[in-house]
Length: 169
Image 1 (cartoon, rainbow, N blue to C red):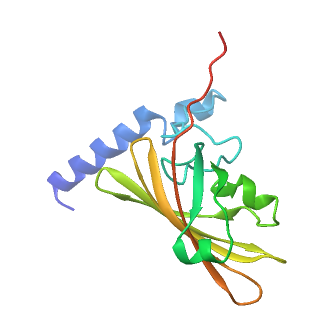
Image 2: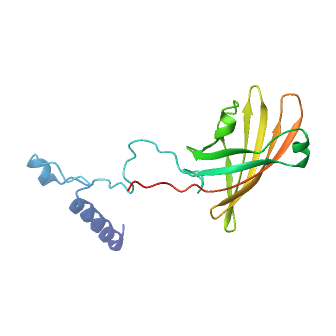
């Protein structure tokens, strides 16, 4: 080894000893424990898993009016009020739950200054609904297609505004 390399190795060894990574003979003779380098976590420990918000829709509620299109009106279907509730990565349609449609996961995507979402909900007795909407600011507009157990289909248009939370006085 050349003197240049020896000098570098001695310097590195001295730095390790001074930092407490390498124990010294003197510390061992005195029965002392050398200083140990403590790992410093870069993030605080996670105590319990928390679901990450799926989108800006998470935790919001949207009262809507659901109106049958012309063909569906001719079948005798009537408009109804519903509320879309986005919670825990799922969406619940309050009126549809009463008919056996289970809350479902949803897909939400940003599109410029707005969001779009879609979901499918199933009911053992009522068939399947597919909801698609665009949300801009405080407004939601979309369509719902209901494919019934007998194979028939109905199409609805819905529109509403984001509910505002009531703060206690």
